[in-house]
Amino acid sequence: MISFRAMANVASGNRVMGRKMAVALVMGFSCGLPLLLTISVLQAWMKKEGVDLSVIGLFSLVGLPYTLKFLWAPLFDRFTLPLGGGRRKGWLALAQILLILAIGCLGFTKPASFPWLVALVAFFVTFFSASQDIVVDAYRREDLTDAELGLGSSMYIYGYRLGMLLASGGGLILADHIPFSQVYLIMALSLVPGLAVTLWTPEPKEPPGRPTTLAKAVVEPMREYFSRKGAFLILLFILLYKIGDTMASAMTTPFYLDMGFSMSEIGTVVKLFGFWATLVGAFTGGLLMLKMGINRSLWVFGFLQALSTAGFVWLALVGHSLPLLACVIAFENLSGGMGTAAYAAFMASMTDRRFTATQYALLSSLMGVPRVIAAAPTGYFAIHLGWVGFFVFCTVAAVPGMILLVKCAPWKGGSIDER
Image (cartoon, rainbow, N blue to C red; front, side, top):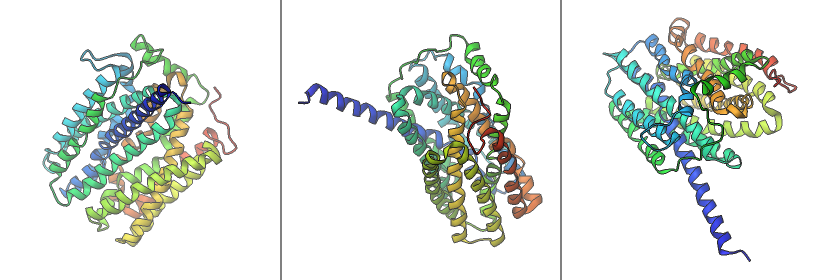
């Protein structure tokens, strides 16, 4: 017979498991929501206000904190705030409070009159958002057991996508009916549940091996990584693998508007429809990786990503067509989801388990470089090349990353990394 104590232990374990998955979902939502508020939603606002395309393209630079977050990530491992709440919860609550305030303030700026003030406030949004990402990644890894990590990561990704959906799709649809200032206020308030969860959930047990000095927190993970054979070539591959896809994405919102699509059409077809296509792509990519392995998946999914970018050339030639828009978006998000799944798996495989948090922060920061640096001149390219020429250029930009696969992820297996 099963004892009442055993049944109670099972019930208690289920409650703990449920709490962990709910926290992962909500924290993912809180991390996903701010990202597009300084990209597609802000682009649409600036476009409507008559801001020049070249200036809109330069606004990609406000995303630099996502690229440089590895620089201050060791601070969160080394220090605990004296305000209480624990090492993870203390930093996370502070980042979330400042992020809510920054998003609210962004809504009160005036893109047409003071674009550089908009840029400054948007920079603070991305800085506090990147800080939140760092701490949430650390919290999730310490809160979940190895057996729970797969499901917890899936819940985080779903939450992340839901946050992106609300910010982009919901934000653009709302902007057709209310001022952008109110849209940003609503988005800021949408982060309050995440703050509540942070205050409610317990501080995870501190893992062994916490850095005893800031120098150790910074130096050891970097020393281990750069001692490997081909370390710099792997970093170059991470920079270039999705550069064409990322450059194309940086100008899609102005492109859709120039093609005559309304913001409601963009919000419904591009964001809502594209959201589900991305989830299907990520799930399909995960299943295919079980059969093909990471290396072959990078080859196949990388080719599909380049092909999907070429689909925008077709749309630029045809013009306003909702059915074609739906087809192009479905394929672009499906292949993008598959490519991202393989990309993230490759980066995870490149980390040393002793330094996963810091090394993954380094690699994921580099993953964001194309979104920030390479996307900055896209407005100029679109003006001088036209939409057809611009998307042809983005398609060709995918070639260097594919060539590096020969060394970094050979088709027949193995890796340049021989550690």
